[in-house]
Image (cartoon, rainbow, N blue to C red):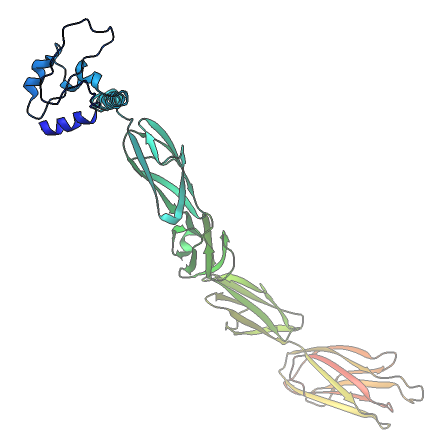
Length: 435
């Protein structure tokens, strides 16, 4: 150790002069004289292991300074060496001061990490935005969702459901912004309430999703249409969930059609004429005959001979009211003949029956026709005339008749004319059965 110090000391030792002595030997002092005012005492550095002898010569400092700070040694060091020593001491002192004094320690800083859940759902903005924050710094976080997502809540070192939250940086912080895909509510209903069901009944669905609804009618009901946020008459409909939706399935009692008809068409009428009726309802039909007709029977989806009938509407129905004429109508073409053209009809009648009707004979007028006369007669079973009438087929071509049969048997009707041309005969008579 003494050798090392000696080596250091030798670095700063000045060159000898001729007036000096050899190292290690005592110098012979001349007679004592007053030294010049600014004379400096030279001190030889000690050799290794000779420190006691050295301090006997120079004396120990009263302040017990290190040997290398003693005035005698300090004067032997060049100016630049002194400067380096002082700078080093000052640096060491300052380093020690800053290391041991708490007030001089650096201000702590903290990091803020933010995550988004799910990753694609949105982003978070910082204000202020730094990599590290000083203690007590307040950082405002703003959550912004992407399309089709909505902010839900904060988790980690922040909480709440508002999209803006403030975090105080008193330690490292970790915050997560939670988002979810936007969802909408689907509500379904049925009208009337007991008429059917809708499947599915409704629920919460992600935005953009599609839901297929099906209407299922109850017994005796049928689906009519969708209303609200859906439309159409098919029992299935698809709803796109781009907002909250409310859909109603409309049902009604099953309805059936009742159609009525009359045979023959001129024979009469049916009341009511028909229509649309709820399932299970009953409809009373009434047949009304026209003049000279009478009701006979019902056919189709009803039966019977009474003029009133009740129909239960458990399906579509078709009912016909059958009438018959109470008077017989005979249309015939009578041939021409100079000697007379006669047409004869007969019928079996009961005594007391009333025979009534009318007869007409018509034809095209020709001036060269030599006769315009014609006659009508009814002959009883005894061969006697019951009714006789003679007319003019141009001027007087219509004859009404009515009589009461006195006898039961075969009665005859005879029509005759003497025209050169054909004639049209119309005979309407009651009772029927003439041929």
